[in-house]
Image (cartoon, rainbow, N blue to C red; front, side):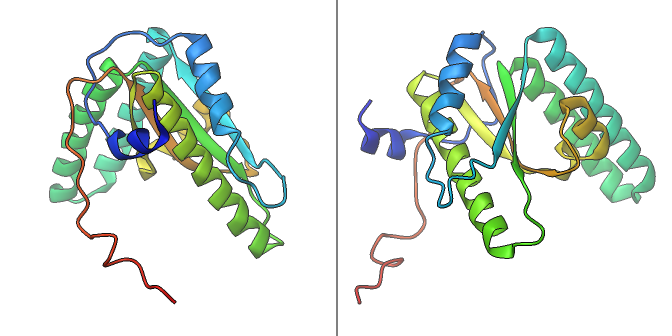
Length: 192
């Protein structure tokens, strides 16, 4: 796939048609992520893969528990919103082929390095999503607090020194999504 076509045709999908993704495909997708630009060659990223029906069902149970706990502490309107989120998440996880939790190693004593490493990790996530697209899969990058809470961090095996940059859902597309941009290239470009 031509890189310009990949950039313009990759879209975020929130629903999936089910279907498998192999460990070899996941390895290739993650390997592409590791080619992200990284200024100081710290390679701060780590990838936690939730793959297979049993592990995805276990993740769903953890997400549902986290959402239920949050709903107990929320007001009535917020609790209704969380119940809606639970239904959406159950449907999403039921048809997802894999989930990849992407973290970066923090540098709390060096704000500039920490910022660079987060940026590098975000680039790695973009590479991951483009590679998945090249393999015929669609993706969703989420940074929802519900997917990053203590119980789920423990489920993923994320250490205290890492911060979750994103949770990427991968699946088989249910259909095409049209691409659009609200701002033209002329609007966001200043020639100096």
